[in-house]
Image (cartoon, rainbow, N blue to C red):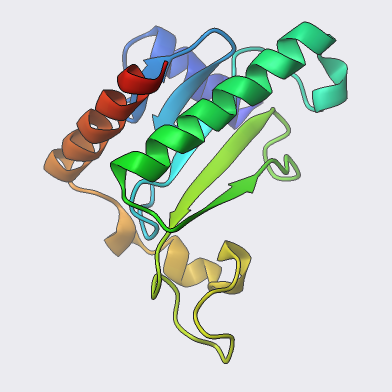
Amino acid sequence: MCLICDRIEMIKNNTNKYFVKELETGYVVIGDYQHFRGYTLFLFKEHKTELFQLDNKTKMKFLEEMSLVAEAVSKAFNCEKMNYELLGNGDSHLHWHLFPRITGDIEDYGRNGKGPVWWYPMEKMYDTNNCPSELELQKIKEKLLEEIEKII
């Protein structure tokens, strides 16, 4: 069973509260945990596990749309730097993690507080205190959707 496919099915059934917008190649969703305010995912519409499995036109469109979503995230949440991840070891379905970064968003750990997201302890990142309330989630989604619609 694929968690990403399940989340996409929820979008199609209008039951995924994190859903923001459908694009040609994927779905924009807000991350369940918001330690990095504005953390967003871009889920590929089909169940594929590797970029090289896509035909060139689809791959280029997916990459372009991911970049446009990242731009919208950056503008919506006034970030200083974007972090991008496409791993797939845990959930083997193409999906981008888009982390808007600002100074001080991770504790120092002797690295000037500017390291990559994986330097931040997982138990802190995925703490339930980082789950947005329904009102916060709605505001985050509206802010991101506004920027996406300006760009796309």
